[in-house]
Amino acid sequence: MSESAHRKGALALGGLAAILASTCCLGPLILVLLGFSGAWIGNLTVLEPYRPLFIAVAVGLLFFAYRRIFRPTAACRPGEVCAIPQVRATYKIVFWVVVALVLVALAFPYVLPLFY
Image 1 (cartoon, rainbow, N blue to C red):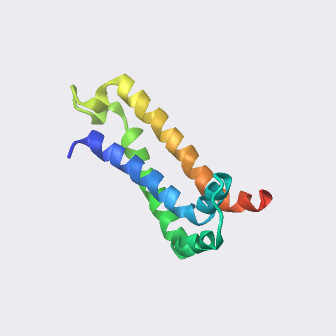
Image 2 (tube, helix red, strand yellow):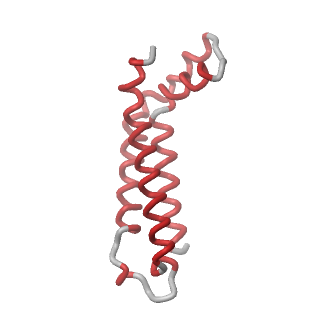
């Protein structure tokens, strides 16, 4: 698998883990905001016991993505995708967007009581 795919995979998995970590709180709120209601929404908290695991996975995958994206250019061979400055800049922007989304997803359960 290419190095570019490893970076993209780490970012995608980090974002997915952050979303899973916040589904117990974020999911019901989104459904209520969309107009869905009912007693079954209370069952969406079934993933709450796994939240610490999802948080650990998200932070771990973001760490590995950071290591790959922000490593020195000298570690890249000429002609590889990681040696192209525009691609490196795009990866860095996408990385910071994912980090922001992860932080929002992780902070959401603590901010959620302010909305109810």
